[in-house]
Length: 115
Image (cartoon, rainbow, N blue to C red; front, side, top):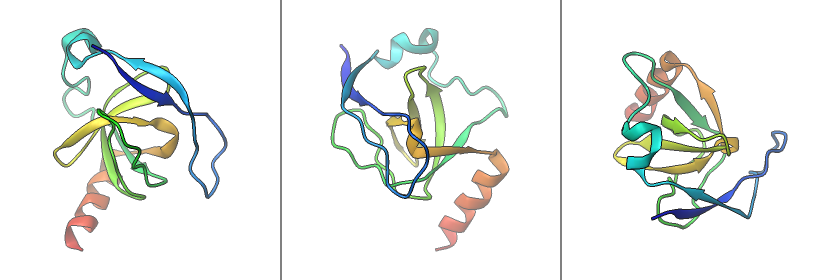
């Protein structure tokens, strides 16, 4: 069974979030990455920081707010990434985020926890 999620437009960064509406088919988790649940092996974790809020409705999407840190679980060539925020996992458009180092992610998560 596939989930349809809109494909994002790739535009230059601005103060407003990108938008998109073309459908994109996502395979179920067990068919992705040869059945691997998490392609980030060992200490090679990948993180990103949200540039904008993302709260689009839909099954399988990951909702987050600006500056929230997301662990990247997998990336599709279409620009849709599978990510984890706390215990919530889902798909989100990569043009809503910027990739950061693990050190930056840990520091930002510690700052969020202190609030």
